[in-house]
Figure 1: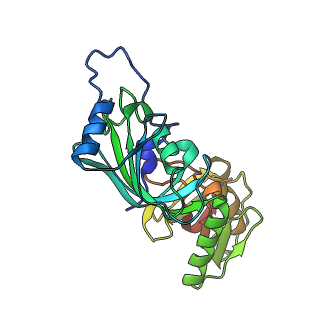
Figure 2: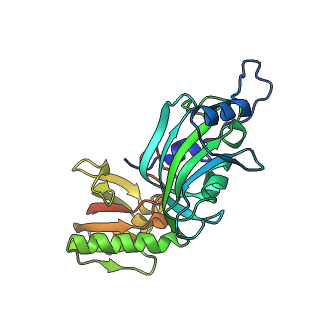
Figure 3: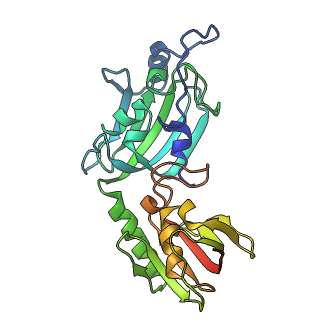
Amino acid sequence: MKSYLYLFFSLILFTACLNDDDSNFNPETEEDIIQYINDNSLNATRTDSGLYYIINNEGTGNYPAENSVIDVVYTGYFLDGTVFDQNDSGIINLNQVIEGLKEGFQLFREGGEGKLIIPYELAFGVSGNYSGSIPGGAVLIFDIKITAIYENYKAQNDAAILQYIDDNDLIATKTASGLYYVIDDEGTGERPTSTSNVTVDYKGYFLNGTVFDESRSTGVSFGLDQVIAGWTEGITYFKEGGEGKLLIPYYLGYGEELYNYTIPGYSVLIFDVKLISIDD
């Protein structure tokens, strides 16, 4: 399953505004949390913030910092057991999630696993999230395992691209920006500049081969100064009529956050491209 953790937990994009005057608001309380702990015979610890956590395996690696990027396996559910999200590999930045997760993940070492029980005050408040999938006042529970901690996710992206290149026997060139490109056919026309208007036939996919976007065979027209940095730079390595591949690290693509509900944060993007024409 792909990582859509930001769809539920991003502080920047999806946290609802609090509305303490909502007369219909009926929050789940700390008493409800304690009842859940007792009913399930859990040995939970409470932090000063009101977060409860259970460590099943502390792990053997380092603890994440408050600004770490981590890879986490998780299942998220409500007190009644209803699952609202799960993932076998979610890349997240602890600066960009709800307070209960930010605090809770820092209690586990790399390789550690356990449970977080998050009161609504440390989650989505009294109004819930904007999509409506998490109601106001809801206690959230997560079974988690931290599989990796990255202090430099650029290096991880680069390593993943190199592994893909090796696995697929590609001959790729790396640029100073961190972009990789493969030229299958250089083309015979002119080269575009970073501000040219062009028409490109393309297919975009992730490292696992899942396609997230594809043009018609006639291509799509746009200005190279109006697209992601990996395209602005990468298309200029092809002459008109040329084709090949762009392997774009997250910081030259869509960055750290979920984009358009389809591209998870920190994603490497691969594009098969053909520069049909320069339209200036």
